[in-house]
Amino acid sequence: MEHNITPNDIIDFIYAEARMLDEGSYNDWLDLWLPDGHYWMPLDYKQTDPINETSLLWEDSFMLRLRVERLNGARTFSQKPKSRCHHVIQRPFVDIFDLENGEFQTNTSMHYVETRLDDQILLALTATHDLKLVDGKLRIANKKVELLNSDAAFGNIQLLP
Image (cartoon, rainbow, N blue to C red; front, side, top):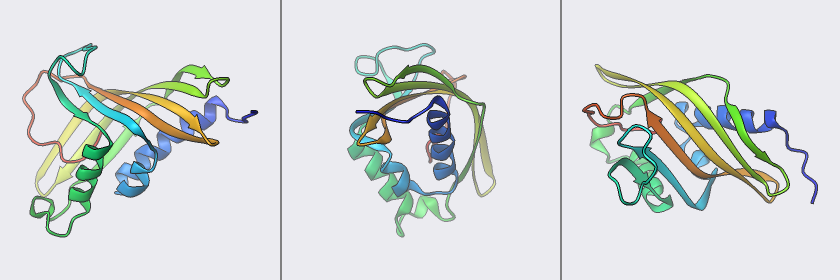
């Protein structure tokens, strides 16, 4: 099967995902995910195991949907007013471009700002996306977000870097 996907299409996908999160289009963002995908935020620098080591976040599709329902919910009082976020991303690197198998991996450095009322946090991070081409569309198979200061004490991160 022939696909006309290019590395620039992969890069555009990463920018589009960040925009969806910034604009609060969480349902559209969920549609980017494969059903067996995981969103992982390691606790330790260069951590390699999300299962047998403690992580800041390890969410499957059920937990991601639950998070989005909470963020979209009318009775979520911790989100009145709603948190907002802004991603400032460097141009992603496409580290794996396997068109034959429809598998791709990106590495993106970014600054993430989240704000609600008088509170604002700034996180420096690197995001690794494992993407798959399914029925001609890119989908997120896994996303790993490595915070530069992952060993710091954090308050609640409401949204998703």
